[in-house]
Amino acid sequence: SLSEPQMSHELVNRHTRYFEAGFHARLSGRLAAMGYRVERDGKGFWDIAGVPETVKAKFSRRTQEIEAAAKELGIVDEQALAELGAKTREAKGEAVSLSELQAEWNERLTAPEREAIEAIHGDADGSGAPPSISATEALKHGAAHLFERRSAVSVRQLAESALRRGFGAVGVDDAWREMAKRQAEGTLLTATLDDQVMATTRRVLAEESRLINLARAGKGACMPLAPDDHRLQGDIFHDPDTDTREQEAAIRQTLSSHDRIMIVRGGAGTGKTTLLKEVLAGIEANGRQVFAFAPTAEASRGNASHSHYQQVPCSNSPTHRLPDRAAVSHLQQAATMASNRARRPEGTPA
Image (cartoon, rainbow, N blue to C red; front, side, top):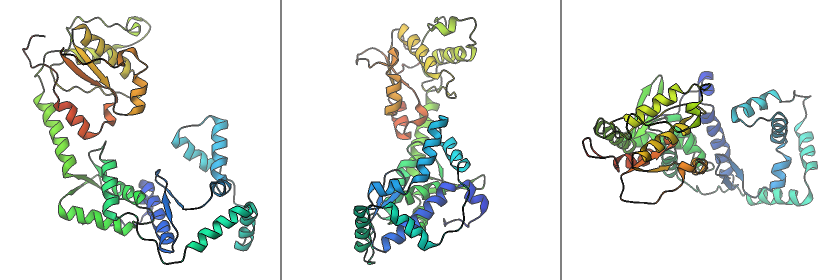
C-alpha cells in the first residue's frame, strides 16, 4: 500500500516540489491548529490571513533583489531565475540574537501595521481552526488538475498537488492515507516504472484506451486530404537558401495519409505552425473546409494572428479539425474530438 517515502538526499533532489509542499503543509497546519486563519493564494502557496500587503513587501526583500537583478540581466526564464537566486545570495554576516532581530523587524513596521499584526495574534486563541477542505476533496482536485494533460504521474506529484490544495487543513499523512484508500478501492491504479511509483485512474485509463482504439480503427480508413501534386504556397518553401526538406516531408505525409488521426511533433521554433498553415491550404484547395483551433486561450490568441486561423462559418461541406498545440489538450477533449469523425471513409468520392 502507499505511504510517505523515507527521506534521502537523492529523493529530496528528485522531488523537491513534493518536499517543499510537505514542509508548507506541516507549517500551515500547525499555525491553523493554533487558531490562525490560513489563506491559499491559488498559486500553490499560502498566507496568514490579515497580514497587510505592505508588510509582506517589506519582508520580501530577497524577492525584490532577485527581480531587480533579473531585470538588469534580461532574465525571464523560471529555471534561470532560480539559478540567479542562488548566485546572488549574500554571504552570511555575523550572528545576531533573536532579540536584536525582533527589534530590527519591529523598526520596519508602521504603527497601523503593528496593530494589524497584533490583531491577528490576538484572534488566534489556540482553539484551532476547522478544516476548510478535506483530504478527499484535496486529492480529487489534485487528480483532476494533473490528469487533464497527463495519463500518469508519480504518486509524489499527486500527493504534492493535494497538499498545495489543502494547505492549513490537509497534512502529509492525510494525503498518503487518502491515496492508499483509493488504491485499495481500485480507483487509483499504480505501477513502478524506473524505481518510481506512477499513478493513474480508471477513468483516465478508459479515456486513453478509447483514444488509442479510435486511432487504430482509423488507420488506412480515409481518403487523402489533398492530391500528391499540391504546390506549397509559403515563400519559405521556394527560397533556395532555406532548408525545408523536413517540413515538406511532414506536409506531404500529412496530406497524403489515409489515416483518420495524424499527429505532427516538433520542438519549439521548428515551424509547426507554418507547416499547419500549408496543410490547411492544401485541404482547402481540395474543396474541403477546416476548423482550426487550440486548447488554451493563449494558444488560440497566437493562432488568431494568422489569416488561416480565423473563425470560419459552419456549412454542409466536408470538414476537418486541425488543432494546434494538441499536446496540451485535455485527454477527454482529445478523445471526444477524435470520435467526432469528419473525414470520409476510403473510397468515398471527394
